[in-house]
Length: 453
Image (tube, rainbow, N blue to C red; front, side, top):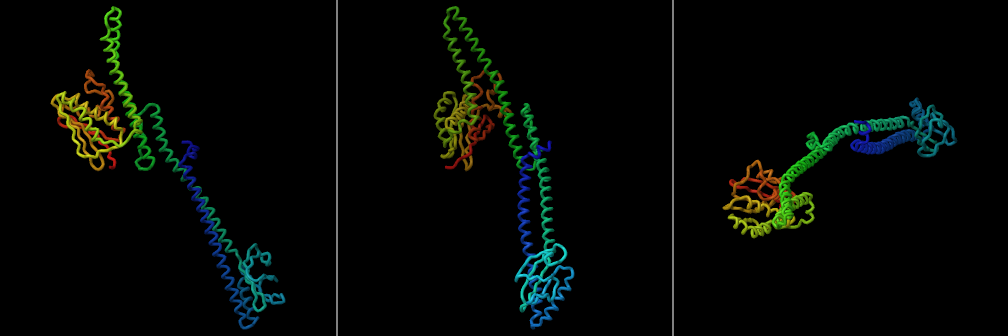
């Protein structure tokens, strides 16, 4: 994998952005902490200076200037390293004691450099000056230690920021590399699919993360695509097989009509036969187009609240006499008055009509056909069952394929699209469809999700 592809990856950029945000927050926190520590050190230093000033001033409590001189001299000798500075100046400006030159500081606080008070180095001093019975007493403390602590803090935050940034870049690169490898597997799979290998699937790592979820969704989509393509191939084969015979019959009929016309014979019967054959071919194509339209979801815009019980009862009234004429008994059983779903009434009516017609067409005389509907809190289960011969269990999934017929000779009436339309309508409505043996006979269930009252 190229390095530039990792640097351009979304995962690396997100990791880098997060790292920059973290570093910004870290630096902001560092600035706040630095200012708080600096302020605290300043307060402690000022407190030390003020306490020293107070101790010295207290030595003058008995109006004895000598005690004050001795105290200043004692503190001065103790500060041989120049970290602390003192001076005592009388009202005339004469230096009485201390280690600073003749400088008069204003009352209160001052910050001065070591060169101003003629001390070596480039230190900064914090100075407090005040009067003791007309004498000016000045106490100062070097800020070297304070500045050293501040410098150490700044260096620490600086190095920590660099380390965090490097770790963020390195970690972002590792994360990006791992994610790129997984997305690389997705790209590789899609390349195989693009070359025609519809059996290729994205490997699932099993961590349950968002990439695994995406891989599952892609695999599901590929499985549906493969099934659709296989179905199209099967449909193409079945169409070629189913339409070859009707087209041959149509051509033979037309040829026969042409031959009769040349001899002056009537060709009405042949033309009627040709018209009927053309109608059957047209019906097959219309059914295929209707199924394709349903599978594309184009009819969802027509969904409204529909009562399944009303549809089933209406179909019972229509097909009762048809079944009776065929020597069969049709019965409808509804166990709940409210069997409403969201759907397309026309398509649902066509779906159940196909199921009932399928049972009437393929069952012998004397068969009982039962249309049933049962509802619970979550679903509405409808079924069409009979006690006829049934079908082999291994054929249950095949009966919904386009143009599929159990009769391989394909000499019986029908296009093999009735149950395909049933499956398409059920899928459009989000319904599950089950095929069961009712021993004897066949039961086809359609289970809908229920809506509220």
